[in-house]
Image (cartoon, rainbow, N blue to C red; front, side, top):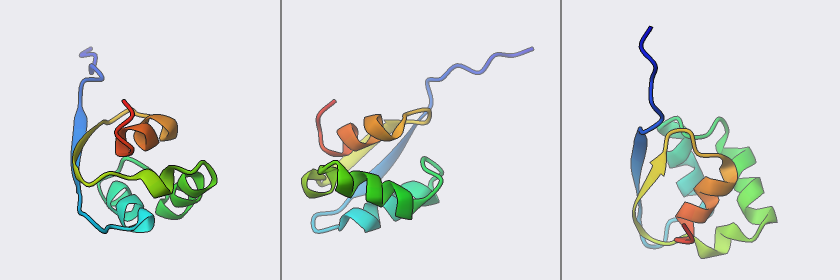
Length: 76
């Protein structure tokens, strides 16, 4: 059997002025999260929605919500 290493990552672009939900929808479209709505709620409840930075971000395919939020905020 071939073991799949978790080195895959997905790159998305966050445009200046994109709202939190727009970014969440993009994450949902590429399959990083299951639900844009629930992830947006998570971002808002934890204050991540206000600190999303514009630019191209690379997110590991197996990242958890907290990791994704930190990457979007440039906190890696």
